[in-house]
Length: 548
Ligand SMILES: Nc1nc2c(ncn2[C@@H]2O[C@H](COP(=O)(O)OP(=O)(O)OP(=O)(O)O)[C@@H](O)[C@H]2O)c(=O)[nH]1
Ligand SMILES: [Mg+2]
Image (cartoon, rainbow, N blue to C red; front, top):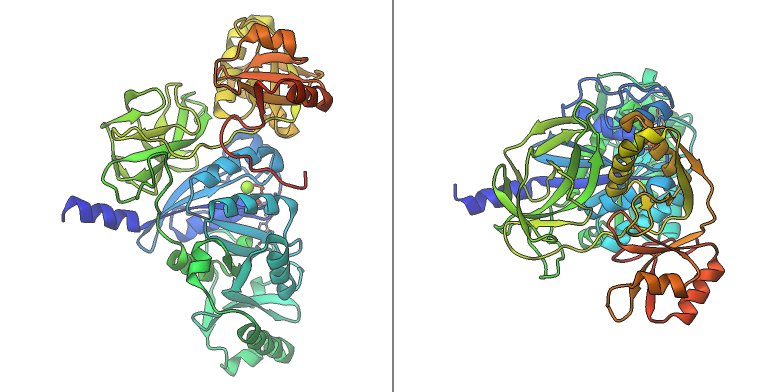
């Protein structure tokens, strides 16, 4: 087979997507169940109680396991029906949303989870907006159907009105006396029933797949299964959907304007097979990505990709750092050199790996659409482009101005070296912003974060991963802005210090930042110093919730 057609074939079987939602909707649970269907996990059902779920594969970080929440995005690869899936399980908590925003840059589609009882929640709204900004297809999965929830029609209405997107229900929930009994697939016109004894159970079921019975909607046996009420309800619902709803419009779907909706219960494996088989048919392969040199097609022969995440200490035994690369075009081959565009250096990507969470396998080759991890000696930054030689750069990934600030105080001054290493690495990862006075690296360290929990993570990880105890003290800083000159000249630090009522510091990449005590100081700086720009993001677009 020619190289060209092999590349095309490989790219066409890549599917790269993120699972997003408000905290606790069940992303990690769904992730594990999908891996189970992909044959990767022999023991799914590891996400049990909120705490102490020692086996959750994608929540590998010590603190995630203790608290039962996801703190950082996890990358998981599995094969399903000949497709190579790259799944990214994101954290739901708003304090970690920067991580999720970056991840959304790396995917071609998203699965948005809703809790059946809660519908569209605040964080769902924000993340959805980021997806919309990128015009990627979005699937909706209504989870936790095993529990009393809202009316499915009401949920559709809420998604449509709150998110401003069309909804096409692909599966539809079926009940018997209010208990979730199965789903009807409107495209294949099949009904899948779950074993009655398991309906309503909320406990993880272990590795087995639940038995599924398929029959047609007009099967008289159905009456017996669902009872008169359930049977009538189903006929009515389907009739209503067929009459009132729009037909499925593929163009709208691909543009992220129409979301196929599914119902189920991740923890019980209910409705997942119907979801996954249809998802794999609908989810598109990688598409062209924008760069400053124009669109880059995934089937372009030259390799290209960008770093969307850097993560230190994934493996406590190695204490190394991994840069996550989304491949945008071509084929990646181990041991070949690539161009690191920002520094204009040729680098050899060492230890390219694919993941099931923390488990790594070395890969010899990977294709556009794949997410791989590469060993990072310390020079990769989020947003960096790498190519086979062409000098192009993909769209920048924004980093946000923090809203919470703390002064970092060491408990044991003898461990300063470890502290500097730890804070620098965590800041380079993007876990937190680290501010220090320019030039003097022995001065105060100030941490800035988008959410308070981020600061706790830093404190925890400094102890767990670097053996440094720290105290976080309050500091009178309210706002941080990246400062640059309107005329693009370099910023003169002395001039800034003399003219602007703020603390001048630099971030971990040596970019000047001014820290203001109050909104008022910022406003006056903006007003009286038009020669400067005060930016809320280090680069790129601001994706902010308008209501905030
Ligand atoms: N009843 C019920 N509970 C579920 C279902 N799916 C998940 N859960 C529970 O919901 C809780 C949260 O699940 P996770 O999978 O950790 O949720 P998440 O969305 O990954 O949470 P974050 O990553 O912290 O945002 C856990 O206690 C799960 O057991 C479901 O289908 N039914
Ligand atoms: Mg999670």
